[in-house]
Length: 446
Image (cartoon, rainbow, N blue to C red; front, side, top):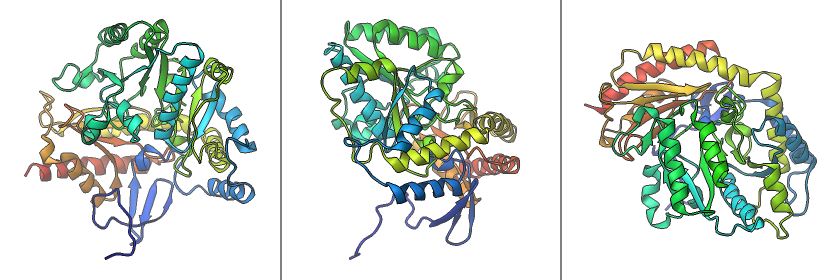
C-alpha cells in the first residue's frame, strides 16, 4: 500500500521528470532535452525560463500574494486591465480574471445569462456552439464543446447546449464529420437554428475563431466570421469568441479575430495570457455588457477563490510587456509562415498526410489512410499515439488530437512552439516530424 502518489495525466507508467526549461527546450532528470514544438499544450508563447517573469512573480508574492476579489482590487490587476485593453477585439473591454480557460468559459456563460436578465430577456437561455470544438473540461465547458470523443463518457450529464456544423473545409460534408466548408451554407444553417429555437430565446453563439485542439488549426473561409457575427447581431445573440488557444499572438495577430476585423461581445482568453507561468485567464466583456450587468440592480452571482489574483495579473502584465518589447506577435507570423513551408516540403511525399493548415505558429497536420479519398485511419490503429511516441523518442514534443473525422476516427498533430523558436529549431521540427510520422504510421499499421 502506497503512502501517497500522483494521479497522472500521462498514460505512461513512469513518464520522464521535467526539471528545467529554457527557450524552446525542456530537460528531464536524466539530462535529456526535448524540443517543445507544442509549447506544452499550446501555452508557452514567450518561451521557457524567462527570469524577468519569475522575478515579477516573486516580487508580487512577497508584497501581496492574495486578496479576495470581493473585498479588494490591486494595482497589478488595474494596470493589466488598462494595458491589455487596446489589444482586445472587444469594444471598451472590462476583464474578469480567473484561473484558466475552463473557468473563463463558465464565467462567460454566466455573464451572458446575467446580461440578458438585466435587460429583461429572461427567455434567452439557449446557447449554440459548433461540433468539432473544444471549450474546456468542466461539465459546463465540456457540454459546450463539440468534441465527441471527450463528451462520450459523460453524455448522461450533458445536453443543455446545442450545436451546429463546424467550419472545416477539409471534411466538408463528410459523413459523421458534422462539417461544412461553404460560408453561405454555414451562415444559413446558423440562421435557421436561431429561428427554429424561437424568437428572443437564443442567448449566445460560442466558437473558436480558428479551431485548435479539436480540429488542429482548421481555418474557416475568409468571409465566414463577418457573416456569422452579423447573424448574431441580427438575432440579438451575443458572440463569444474562445481565444484561449489562439490569443496573444499564436496565429500571427494579437487575436485570431483580428485576421477578419471582427469584434466579439465576450472574449475568453487564457494559455498565452500568462504563457504557462501562472494559472491565469479572463473574460473580456464589452462596455455595453459590463455597464448593463453592473447597473442591473443585482450582483453578478459568480466567483472563484483564485479569481482576480494579484500575482496572476503581475505575471500576465510582464508577459504582455515581453510580447510587445520583443515584437513576438510579428515573430509568430513570420516564423509560422516558415514553419508551415518547411513542414509542407518535408511531408510532401508522405501518403499519410492529408492536409497541412493553420495561421502563425499554430500549424496542424491531418493524417489519413488514403490521401485521395481522405479516409481516416481506424481509431483502433492508434496512429496519433504512435506518432507522438516516435517524436518523443527523437526528442520532439508535439500536440495530438483524435476523432476529428467522424467523432471516433481521425488523427491530427498540432504544432505550436514558443515564439522565440530559432530558425535552426524550426528546421529540426520539420525534419524530425517527417521522420516521426513515417515511423509512427508504419508502426501503427503493422
